[in-house]
Length: 99
Length: 454
Image 1 (cartoon, chains in turn orange, yellow):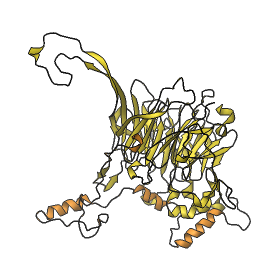
Image 2 (image 1 turned 135 degrees about the vertical axis):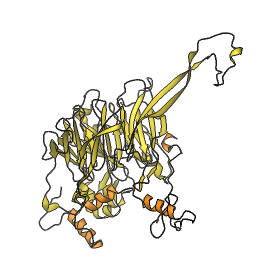
Image 3 (image 1 turned 30 degrees about the vertical axis):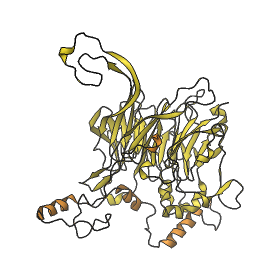
Image 4 (image 1 turned 90 degrees about the vertical axis):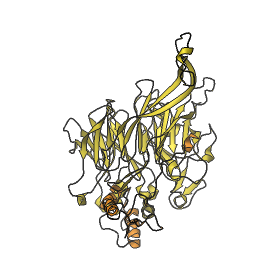
């Protein structure tokens, strides 16, 4: 499979060199933890229910600051609200496979 | 005869294609799982939109001996919906990760479908008659004035247009902190396992408020995390045995009789790595995306990014066979890493058991890019590359084998590696349990191929 001829670099190593040339700061740990952590955190969105409820309690009569035009970026100075998070509706349309 | 000829002697022909023709694919329409039931009469698909579509094979037409029955829509329903876990700030996708059918016990059919967090048991039942002739009710359901009833009659069942109903019978929730990648029904037909990135749980099909944790690989300190569970399956015959694969290319076989928590494996299957060949990509491409036992349970097959490996359960130190799916990609790993394709999770499957040769797992099928899929014959060691494309639409015309030119001069009819469309991936394929009929899912279409009869 990975037959290494004398002096020749395996295709994988050549590809690795290409990658390191493009991204010199790439983690020293091959494969590994970075991908795993990203995989485990899939679906994580920034919304802190604690902050939200505290802010709601403090600002009973005042209006909560809402998100800026970029709905995807709900971090920063304001307290995110459930309304700021992109709404995900289920597919009420029948699958096209059944069409 | 499947055994002797094998993969290349089966002449695959296009049979049907389901789904939209247009290139603009909505996220929800992306097919995420395909599974035949135990008889092969039903074929289920799940998609990213949380929907399940079940097709049923027509009864064989005695006059038309050229082809086996076609698959037509039988039932479709919304299995899962998107959710947001406010406590953990976690968006829960409705995508159906896996569907597994239960063996049929009565008139109804049952399947398990799962998304990242919740498994559901669905009952699919037919209604083809209804009671008519009630004494106190009109046919449309309105109640009759009892004083107008002068005679009594016995209600009878009259035929009606077939109605197929799907109803959720059990919901197995709140047992997984991480994302469920596998479900597998035990050979006892009473229990099943569900596996997420770090844990495997055992359930009883009747009990939803309780689940036993049988594997837990979560480290005390998450900084020490080095590998995750990628797939798990029960042994087809031994109800106490199951395997799970990891992101590091290992497979562990566990026996539930050994202890309640099967953190210590009974067997560890791992191919030794040549340290001089190790690269940044080695671990990523060794990650196992699917594991499937052979029909007898003597062997198992694993799929990693570039190959399929067959393991003999009696030999832990290396696979008995290795088949290269698309070795030409090894010199493209840099760009495949950049476009995330290197993380694509391909599944694999065995041939069904042929009428004449029962329980022999002889042919391996798995997907690749450019809507290509591959088959390997374990006996003859021959392999074939076929394409799922609407251009090959003529029923009973044998599919033409495809060839990828890795380097050098491209021959006519070959396609060069750089021309491959990496957005056209075949991740999910299924083989009818008893016949040479296969279901191949492209991004949003389902192809059905059959072997040419006579």
